[in-house]
Length: 214
Image (cartoon, rainbow, N blue to C red; front, side):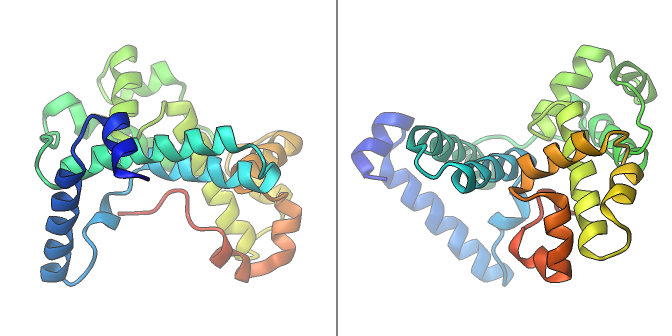
């Protein structure tokens, strides 16, 4: 992006961006690995997947792709501010972060038969509105979108590893409708689950994880 356009869109000086990136580069060298990669969150991965899927389906839809590119820039700038200390990182007690993270773990463990949003809020001792807001702050999406993502990620891993067939994978993560599962899988990964299964284990290298364990 041209520096003039960057400054006009973000209200930030390009010199400050260069300084921040240089700071992160020097920090990464001291740690022996890129520090930035550890903090790529769910919202950034989801945005990237949406852009990737759209490009595969309709590469001429430049307006949508440019919008997604700008969204990803905005998300990265927010992360950059956190990493460089210019934006305060939430403390353990702020916004009930521990409870939200615990709620996410419950959904991971119970994805086949997950609790409803109100029950989940009760399980982690939060009110419903606080749960919804907290999920968006911590994971970058609501509980339903997060659950959908972890279900599809788990199913994809099972299929790629030939641990079960497509129907079994869908059922194991909580999908009662194979057609709904296939539609969601293709929307997310840009490929039908049966076609993905034929690619075998090698397919995993071509489809990076939407959710990664930190």
